Image 1: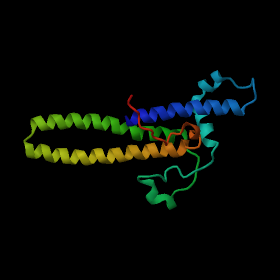
Image 2: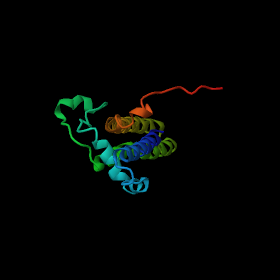
Image 3: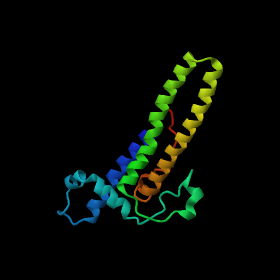
Image 4: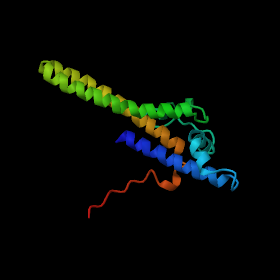
Length: 159
């Protein structure tokens, strides 16, 4: 679910970036097709429109070293690493849970419990890194996605 949320954020960013680029350009000079073909550059231009920021000074880790961070323009490579921070949690959870099941069936109960405790800490750290990646993405796209109300959560009503 956490990775799907990131994918949805990237989709919203691409929609808003294209819309912003088309609104800022002269009519007839830029087409939606050309913006879609250069989506990476369109997204980076839209994110850079809001100026340099302290992108890595966000919770849960970055708020501790906020004074040490400097404002900069986020790069495409850094956004790719943000995506990898989130994706590593999905992959690690799959493999560690598979290993948990195997260890629980193979090892003695005491040893399996120790392995499960160690792996639980690894998953927690991995989850925190994934949340850190989401916060970096939120910081980079907050102004761009303001109209989408990405921070509002409305519980679904059952009818």
